[in-house]
Length: 180
Image (cartoon, one colour):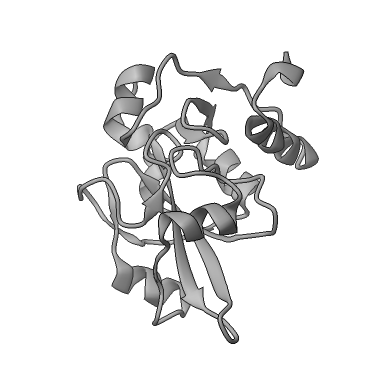
């Protein structure tokens, strides 16, 4: 069965396995273009959907340093809070092209792990309100459930207040469905 999965999903499974974690992948019948769509398809609360949002900070020369924000589906990233938490005053959201190039995944399926190079991750503490949250698994139809502590360990994420609770879905180049 693993051999039949999309290569992007296999990369996510392999990255989790390297950390000693076995994921249970769910393939949705249709793509989910928003966190609301993913919550409806899974029959879970909107806050249980993990939006994986890619932001960038300037590096040396033309280099961009990615920062992955794992945000509850009900929340929106607050750039001022994110800048303060990361110490990156010039942080901005990544374009779709930048998000794909830096994460190795297309918007709609950006997962918390499996990227071509390590990406600094910051996790919204509101995800801890749920026993299980759902994140993208590499494509716009593949998702996986995980307790927030497992998600934090997978992404090696810093938990910090980076969002405005109850904001509109978005705030960065994101996985529009369960992954962010």
